[in-house]
Image (cartoon, rainbow, N blue to C red):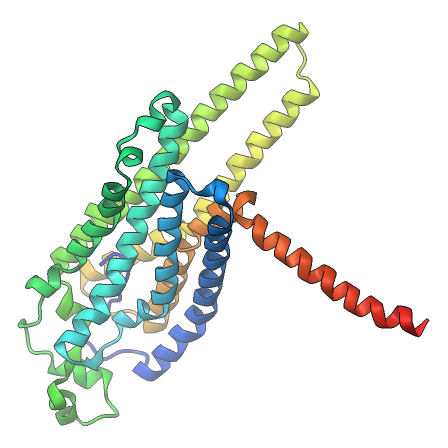
Length: 350
C-alpha cells in the first residue's frame, strides 16, 4: 500500500518490540500531527471567514484542506499498520482501510487542485468553462469516491486473510502474551500482509500514487516554463518601450522574483516529496526481496515520509495572504490587547 509499506519479511519477529515501536511512532507523529491539524484549521477558518473566497477554486482547496486535516488525524495510525497487533477481523480491516482511504483521498484532492490551477494558467480563456466548475458536486465526488472504492477492495475479498498460517506473526508481535490468548475473544493477528496482497500494493504504488506525484511535478514544471516565457515577453516589451538594451531595475526585480519562485518550488518538492518517494521505493525494494529490515528505520522513514507529504497543502495555503489574513488580524488584536494590559499598570505606577 502506498501509505504504509512496513516490511518485516518472512521472519515476522520484529527487531523492535510492539510497545517500543508504538512509543516511537507516537513520539514522532503526535507533534507533527498536531501541527498539521492546527495549521489546516487556521487556513480553513480563514477561507470560511472571508466571503470573497467563497468560490469554486477555493472550494476545491477547502476539500484538499479537509483531506489533509483527516490525514493529520490519521497520521499516528498509518505507521501502526506496519506493526502486528491483536485485533478482530472487522477492527483489523478498519484499521488498515480507513487510513489508506484518507491518504488516497488526500492525493486525489491534491491532483485536482493542481490541475485546476494548471488550466487557469495554461488555458485561461476556457478556465471558467471547465467541467469541474460547472459540476462541482461531480468533481468533488470524483476525488472522494474512487479512493474509497479502491481502499475498500480488501473488505470485499481482495486480501490474504485466509492465506498461510499466521500464528508466528502473532507470536512474534505479542511475545509477552501467551499464544493461546492471541485468538481468544474472536481476535487474531492483524498484519498489513493479511489485509493487502502484494498485487494490491504494487497497483496502488505504481498505478495511483506514483503517477499522481509525477502528474503534479509535470504540471508544476509546465507552469514554471510558461511563466518564464511570459516573463521574457514582458522584458522584451519593456525594452522596446524604453528603447534600451540594458536590463532595467524592474526587469531585474522580475527575474529575481521568478528565481525565488523556482527556488521555493524546488525546495518544497525536495523537502515534501523526496522523503516520501525514498520511503516508498525502499519499502517496495524490501517487499520484492522479501527480506527483513530494522523496525526503527522503517518507522522513522514512514513517519517523516508521510508527514512531509501532508505539509504540501499547508505550504500552498500559508503562502496565500488571503487565507491567513483573518488569523493575522486576530493575532494583532490579541497582541494589542496584551500590550494595553501590560502598559496600563506601568502608567498608573508612574
